[in-house]
Length: 598
Image 1 (tube, rainbow, N blue to C red):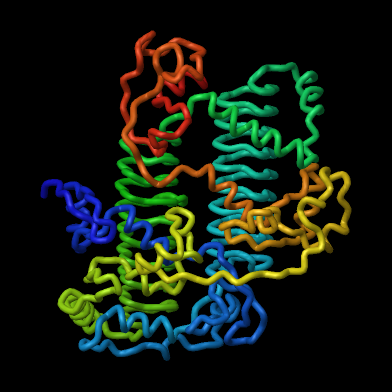
Image 2: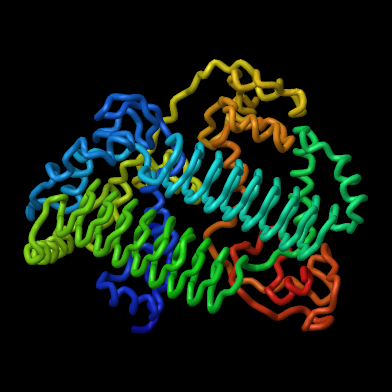
């Protein structure tokens, strides 16, 4: 089939379905989408509460617990220990399918009856506190989100295989590190971003195979550099001794300088390596992966986001996991040995799952919730293989003949992800608000639920502005203080980052700051996360051309250090990039960028 231009039923903008897309939809036996890629992603992410936590009691054991569901949730919520246990019988919640009632209505009725797990963690392989969510095996970690195989880490998201690191985002194999963004295999680094294989690097951007560097940009295989100037080993350590990294005031000055200096150097149009025929950003060891972001080891994927555990193949509109998956479609937070998964959330291990929420090690299931180790189930009720196949076909036929009509009049037949208004989360509780921020009024117009944020009064004993400037002036008494977040008590009246308004320093965190001579933070963990993700590029692509004009950047800000393949003429390379044309960064194609950093 040829390419086709369609109008999105949600935003009314045109989008294109390519011939290769039609072939994929035919392969997995689903109709072509009616929402554009952006609206499909926004809808999926509205089913993903990653960071909004509540205190509540477990509805089984009665103990106090932390949960992603508020105390007034209409369905039972169990703490992870109880939910994973044999204290309750999952099979009693199965319900008969009613052909006279819409499928999504019946599914929502099941959701409101079946106990939900308060936090989505791999409890059997997790050691330590359960202040985690959407995590795989973890050891002694605290307030970690979308992470796996980490140890002694805190306050980080999208981190994999990291140890003893704090306040990081989108990192893999980072050890003894602090405030890193998009870094791979780095050790003892801080306040830096877009780095790989670096040791003892601070306040730097775009570094590869470097060690002992401070305030640098776009260096490869360098040592003992300060602000891109080389020093002898002895002089390097004398120079950086001038900058006390234990001082909050000095650190904030260097963080600001890092951002400003990075704008004076070219950025590559797309981050990644060892790729073949790809488009997107943060793609590594991928082949035929298109319009995707933060993918490792993918093949023949499209519209994917955060698939960090290879391999993954033949996946569309899928994200936030991976690990040996194939033919995943319109699903989020599903992974680990899965195949043929459609319209699912937070499921792992299994195949042939459709319209499911938190099912584990299940095959051939449709419309199931909180199920484990089952086969041939529809709405949690088990059937023989023959009965299952027959009833599944009937349900799909009924979904098409009796579609769900949401409050805005949008029609939901088989082949659409869950309607946004049926999400168990309010929009502003989900990660969708990070990527597609909207107001409460806009949420109402678009059919998304909204959560009224309650005012907090934690009894602040130490406002952020009263904290000692230097970690040397801080003693163990800091752990007894309730520190006011600098955002939450600002003259402007707070922020929109889910600010907790106050926070405490826990013992392992205090030891980390003392060990590395880093100052006490002034923001709560939520606001620190919000400050980090400001550096994240959008999940969109724009057509652009290389800004190398021959002798330097076309805006005159940067002067090339070596001659390029196009000589004194402007580079003619064109590409798609996640840097929009109106942004201030200098964007080079891969060839021109590599000439400048090699």
